[in-house]
Amino acid sequence: MLQNLRHFLELIRFSHTIFALPFALLAAVLAWSQPDTVFRFRDLTGVVLCMVFARSAAMAFNRLLDRDVDGLNPRTVERHIPSGRLSVRAVTIFTIGCSAAFVGSTLLFLPKQLPLRLAVPVLLFLLGYSYAKRWTSFCHYWLSAALMMSPVAAWIAVRNEFAVTPSLLAGVIFFWVGGFDIIYACMDADFDKEEKLHSIPSKFGITVALRIAFMSHLLTIVALFVLWSVAELGTVFLGGIIVLSWLLLYQHWLVQPNDLKRVNVAFFNVNAVVSFGILIVGCIDIWVRHSL
Image 1 (tube, one colour):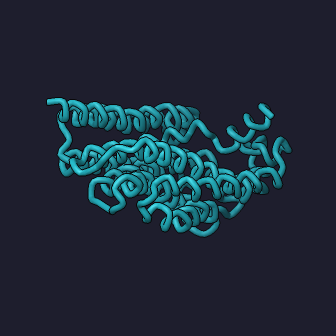
Image 2 (cartoon, helix red, strand yellow):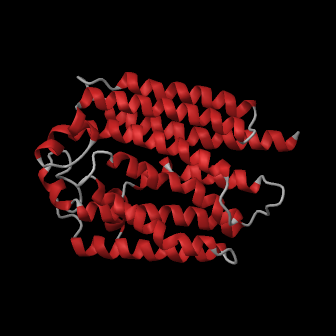
């Protein structure tokens, strides 16, 4: 059982949940900081469970849909379904279970109705990403659009409304994730072209793809400063995003068109720091402002 659990956690890259969960938690903290909002532990539990189950369902579905392609790609041939460590049936049951658990977790937000009503459309959009690279080179931004829903959804879960602040935070995610997913896709540019799969690196080449990723991260930095201004955050958040902006640009020094050996460092290590960094400086900033 423990080995199967480990296989499933590896299948969905559970550790990569850290990319989106901090943004959802920051949106929730910003929502709770509003004067007319009451903190409920069940809302916090619901945000975490919904994030984990939604991402797990989407990742497992992606592995199901891509199992034949993964079996042909030297970089992914050892993934769990092509290598036989997990069966198609087991991953299908896991996907259905996580999808049901995601929808069920929205019941924690009752009597607020919006989370439950939006659960199925959101889930379908998340699962739809798996088809994107079969018809559009801009599939990276479908992924970023899927992840950008996390702060909006968390705000809705807490306040049962749409608002500008979580939408700006969503904009940060959109450009940030799109940029680093383009960098990651550079490793499969030749394979995608051979198999007629769509991506920005396979369509435009690695050099142009890295330039697009760089521009996407410049827009991320702009969105961060707009968020700081509109949400009326303080100097702690400002100092934090200056450092994080430098980190975003640093990963473009790590990855060069003729040297992709450090893509995994740029993809995981740098972006994990960016994600948790935004949550930490945001929470500290809110705590400092409310304690004055």
